[in-house]
View 1 (cartoon, one colour):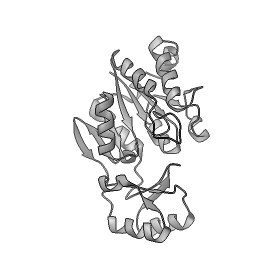
View 2: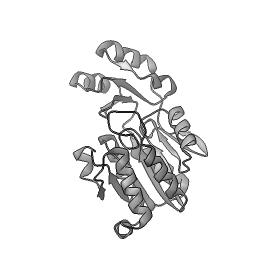
View 3: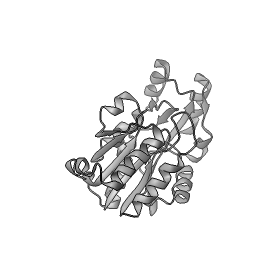
Length: 232
């Protein structure tokens, strides 16, 4: 079995500043599933949002939600400690940030906008035993330092797949831990420079079009040698 794990925002979308999905990317991923690949999604979004997306897109390789805190494959697993939501109300009040509408559906990794992290926020979180970071899309507050990489490791173990049989596709700094857990790393052309340093393949096209570019080359066998060299 070979597995492709794909980030959502900025990777499956038309660009990094829109929620609109790149439909050609969905089509390409569904096509490669026919050859025996499984396709899963990895995101900071809530499980209900990702479960609906996963179901309607027809993917079959599992879900990593809430930046690694929630994993789904045939059943649901919560792999992080839940956060005290009284602290979240305090965070919103002190720093005048707005909680995501998805927070009511989340248990471990809560998000806020605008996505600008300050030193005062970091001090506040540290003093309360919380972990805080920004994805560039939102501020994330959680009970632990666990990230997408922890969820990806858990999912891979559920599937019984080796690291060398997994391809990851991402765009932002929150994808770094996730990409470090896979055998072949793909970064879309408009991804952050920090992430591109990890990439085995950097697409010429941006976001979802970059996914199309890579998957089509994979289907045609144009980069199969490079992937096999990385252990895939």
